[in-house]
Length: 177
Length: 105
Image (cartoon, rainbow over the protein chains, first blue to last red):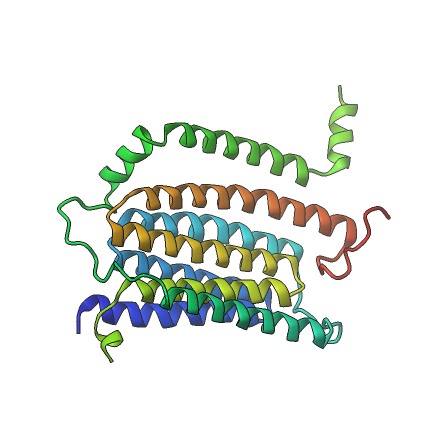
């Protein structure tokens, strides 16, 4: 068995387990930990696809920044477990799982019935997932989108500051001038 | 059994679809706003996996550049979304999406 096969099956099953753990955990911190585990398994899957830049970015950005922010907010709000007494109606859960199964079946059928032209990873001379190739493509072909993302990040920082500020701090600040 | 011995593109795509539907089920069935946000991140990651798969199997790097942009957008969305959740909690003392159903109180 090839190495890619072993790693794909192990990492794939573990990432599904992490995803299921995220949606079924009662405690939000357990849910966040399962999601971090899922992100690490996904980074491993990116490595099996020879996308090393994206794998490192996955760990740095998703597991290292976004999930830390989420865990900060969970701890800050000091949430308890999602109470089962005030649980949503059974109708909601049944509808949710039914629609989910329908979506799974539809995606599965579409993928299996599609025109399967790509059997193996191409043994190309150019390493598509390397930093050099991605950096060249980013700066040469997608420069405008890169700058637009910069603007988006700036707007997000300002927006987060404005949305999360407290009003009494603002009035105290104003009264001192 | 041949499907077990070599990995084709369909394996990765089925995995991506499964993770996407697990995220969708999570968004539909959970009521905690932060857990719903985490399930949305699950769906974004499933799409990332699908894009990187196509990029690797077709030898085209545009898919991975797009994943780079999706990660940046997800980080921005995380910051703003969690700020909104904080502001919601400060005003309502709950982030149960069933109970946040008034436009003005």
